[in-house]
Length: 368
Image 1: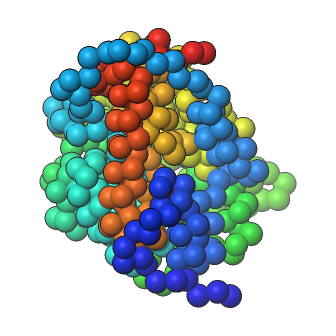
Image 2: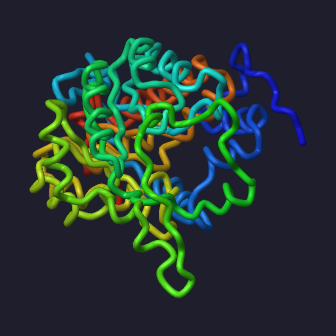
């Protein structure tokens, strides 16, 4: 078994794009940790298609435009961000770096990138907030212990988080075969520390003659539409729903009071065979019609991908695996460099496409 290499102290010149971080991360993580952070569900078709779908979309530039005063700023929920790029919620970041989320938030702060902190973070949400010099949102998995869930929401609000992002597409974990084959288990010292002290549901005894999953406490207590109102009664923060893939569900979300939509298939980690998020973004943005912000994640590897998402109706994007690779390779420096590369590429794309700000990016900039 190979021993992971030490973290990079400086970024080598060969790192020209975020993809260049993946092999560097691979050399600096255990095989099991890499399988957890990089793998997808089942045959990983959806995970691969998230990236491939961007390549199918072609750009259509508009030349000789006035680019003076150009910028990439976006305003969401009363907060202005230098770019539409956020760090997606990634669990157990101590798998990538010994300081985990504390190192990631340093990198995010250096580039003033918003960060969405996972319920399953390996550092307490208060410690992350104390280290942050950039706005934080809290990603929530609704727990069977509703009293504990209410405390989590209040802890996030008290710590200064700016939004609650409820994940709605994962009532249970996906069948991540790559992770299973690696023999993955959380190493000593890595756990979902924000869930310590929570009452755990009773064990589900499987009857071979009956359902193997249905009837489990996990599914019996999974989030439902009426839980959105329950959450909103317990916080003054905006509540976004992450994991919407259809226009019908987006309309339903708005009817139940959602303050924002995140178009997401969980990075292809929950159910294989789902469409790529960029392929469904336009129809969802159309039905939302600007009533609430629409964000998306899944497959973004270039600043031009961010541009395409903006053209199809997103106000911002979340990036997960690339920043995890940066974290694993070089800690906070790697995270900030990933953000810098993507923002630089976005600005170059905008300039060459004739767009001086995000509002100038329209569907007319895509040829298909």
